[in-house]
Every structure is written in structure tokens, then in C-alpha cells.
Amino acid sequence: MNSLSIFTRIQDVQRLRQIFTVLARHGYGHFVEKLGLRDSRVLGIILPQPSTQTASNPERFRQVLEELGPTFVKFGQILSTRPDLIPPSYTDEFSMLQDNVPPFPFEEVEDQVRIELGAEIRELFQSFDSKPVASASLAQVHRGNLKDGTQVAVKVQRPGIKPLIESDIDLLYLLARMTERSIPELSLYTPKKVVREFERAIMRELDFTIEAANAERFRTNFNGNSDIYFPGVYNELSGKRILTMDFVEGVKITDTPLFGYDPKLIARLGLRAVVEMIFRDGFFHADPHPGNVFVMEGGRLAYLDLGLAGRVREEVRDKMLLLLLAITREDFEEVAQIFYKIGIKEDEVDMSEFRADVIDICEKHFGKPLKYMELGAFIKDIIEGSFRHRIRIPYEYALMCKALITMEGVGKKLDPDINIFKESHPYLVEIFKKRYNLDRASKDLTKTLITLSSVIREAPPQIKGILDSFESGRLKVRVEDSGAEKRAIRWETIINRLIITLLISTLVLASLFLILFGKSAWATFFSILGFFSAGFLGFWLMISILRSGKF
Image (cartoon, rainbow, N blue to C red):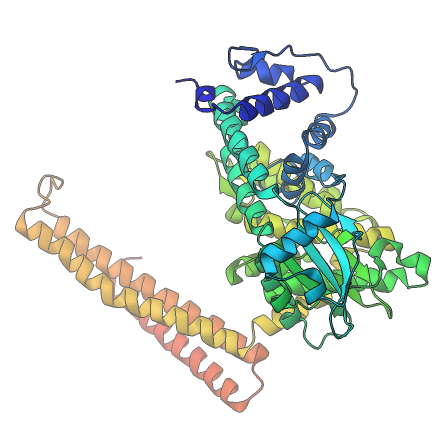
């Protein structure tokens, strides 16, 4: 059955026709033809028009999104933070998308507040400006005062925006399915996954309670930090479609030189903030572009628009931390190994070629004076190189990279000589020491010992089960010689030796951490005990191997 036949509503057909017409107008008529829709009975005849523009593909696609309206603008804005899904050239272009949406009438603002908070604006606020201070595709922001005079910003969701977005998402899923079926060469970019990720992100942004929770978590993480500020939330005046927060008075971070602030100091402050968010907390502002970062009186940085936040697991932070430290040491072999390990392989990868490409990229970027080195340009080249080898960078890493790259771009505007590697290195080392302290080493050792204990308990019964299978004849079909039982016993010996070797390595590492970061007499005692135990086990293992006569 034709995919289009499921769309019976006239507005869906009209919207699809508008989408394809806009694509054709901007030089994507060949895309319409490949989908087999040039002479669609449902849509009518769409004549692909050759583009007369000289713009690049990413620029023309940005123009398509802008012309198609709020949903598609937001689609591009969210994709601009996802270099794991689309090439860096497109993320760069989509980051320039702006919401040029007129504000909705104040009467509708009053309706939204009444429906969401159950009272009239005059009953909830001492004053409330009817003219918004900012207007975007999803919401607009009004200045107000609480009954006690506190100045607040009230974010009000645009009426009817959710059903409109849901309808457009349905069409995007349809387009994604048609694209995957008709244009196989685009399969690497997984169109359906792109739409699914957009749907997940946009639905989170439409629920203002999530942004409120994000704000509270950021405030907790930076509690006591006099340089970084996150606005407080008034939960009694907030809901899914209304968000009331402290009003932030300040200037955009890129405008600070005009107001007498030290741009170099502000650049370094912003850089340290994003490094701490990512590597210390594992929870960070996913899109810290200049419109979302303000400088308050006294040079304090304030972060706004907290609906899009990134979360990274501890092991992901560890690998990214090691990657950045390897870059600062110019250990290019290690950089290649880490990127290969974290990448998602869509096909078989020639590791030697991938390593050679990564090392070439590293030498290209790091064989120059420090002030000319840019993390952003390096990451973009690495991601594009990975795409050539059909390797995609996982979402968490890509989001971290995007946040760092965005903050680096802001820093470069304030101080062209700033270098993210030089500036972040002391912070990374500091965070590394804090993360790999005695408590962390103890936790890791405990986890490893629990795992080893489980393996040691489970391995003999599993091997015994294999031997029982041989004895009962259940595996006779697969075994053709009489040496199977001996080989199984031999494998049991090998597995036991591997377990002992892993235990020795763990003891050595744990003891090393205790020596480096432990500051008590107990830490010294346990480190010596660990080294002694590892030495004893190693000696016993070597004697066992020598006595067996098999190396």
C-alpha cells in the first residue's frame, strides 16, 4: 500500500505538498524524484525546479527549514547539537537558525496562565508586563513581579504548539521511512533515528517541569560558587506550560567588552564552568551559545534556557577525560585507540587505515603554535573522518564535544588567543585527581572483587556442566575425538590462570592509586599489603606454569 494513502486529512496532504515544493525550490527536486513523488496522485504534480543559488548544501537545507516554519526550525536547532547524527558542516549551519516568530496576543497568555495555574494573572502577580521580552517558536517570556515585589521571568508556552509539532513529527516519520526505502545511500544517517531523537528532545522541551528540575540540579551542583549563577524556580507558579523563574539582568556574554568587563577573564570562567559541568558533575548545559549565557553585574555568568541538558555516565566521562589528556600529551596513538573503542561501527573497519587517518588529523591540528590549535576544528575533522570509515560517535560523546566546541567558539570571540587545551588542562588534572582518589579506588576495587568473586564461583559449575554434557552424550554430535574432556580441563586451567592474572592486575592498580592519592597511614598499609599479595600470587602463578611444563 502506498505510504501516502494513510494520510486522509486534507491538511496533512497540503503540508506534505508544501514540504516537497519548498525542497524543489531550493534545489532538492532530485530528492523528490528519488522518492517517486514527482507525479503523485495524492500530492499532484510537483515540478523539481533547478536551483539557481550558489549556496552550499548545508546552507540551502537551513533555508528549507526556515521556510517550513517553527517545527522545522526547532528540528534544525536540536540537530545542531547532534554531530553524532549528521555531519559537522550541517550542525554548524543549523546552529545559525533563528526563531523569527511574532509574539502571540496577551489574551492567550492570560488563558494559558488561568488553565495551567488555576487563577488569574492579577491574583498571582503584583505586576505582569503584557509585552514579552523574548518570543520564540515554543514560548515567549514576560517580565513580572511577585506579590512581595521580587522580579521574575514567566515563560509561557505558545497555545496549540504541541498538536502542531506532533502533526509535523508524523510527517517527518513518513519522510524518514520513504527516504530509507528509496535512497539507501542515506542509511548511514539513520533518518528514522534522527526523527526519533528530535521527537524525544522536543517533547522534553515542551514539558517545562523538566526545565525546572534541570535548573534545580544545576543550582545544587554550583551551590557556593560565586562566579556561576542559575536562576531559581518558583514551583507554585510553574507547571508543564508555565515556568516562573528569577529574572536575570545582564548582557550577552559576547557583548561583555562593551560594558567594561574583562573578556579574557569571562572567557576562562565560561570554559571552566563547562569543564566542571561535564567532567565533575556529568550534567551540563547542552547548548551554551551566546544567547543562553549572560554576564550579570560583577562579572557573574548566568545560564538560561535549561530545557536541553546533557547527561553522561561515569565511564563515559572517564574515557573522554582520558581522550583530552591524551590530546594534551600529543599521544596520537592513544587518541586513535580511544576513538576506535568508543565509536559505533556500522561496518567492518580497517583499523590500520583508521589509525593512520586519526594520526594524520592529529598532526595537522597539533603541529602548529598553541594559540592556533582549536578543539572544534579537530573534533569536526575526526567526526568526518569517522563517517568515512562508517564509524559514528555515540550520542553522549557527541553532546559533550558540542558543548565544549560551543564554549570554545564563545571564548575565541572574547579572546582570540585562548586555547582550550592549555586552559582546561589544570582543571582536567584536578578533576582527574579528585575522581581517582582513595574512595574511588576503593569503590572500583570492591566492584572488581565482586565481579571476580562471581566469575570464580560461576566458572567451575559452568565447566562442570560442559563436562557433564560430554559424559551424558548430549554433545556427542558435535565432538568427534576422545580428547574433549582433557581439552575442557585444559580450558578450565587457562580460565583460572586468567582470573588470577586479572586479580593481580587489579591489586597492583589499586595499590598504585592508594600510594598516589592516599594520605593516611592506613592507605600506605593497604598499598603495601596489595603489592605483597600481588607479588605472592604472581610468584605462585609462575611456579604453577613452570611445573606444568607448558608455556
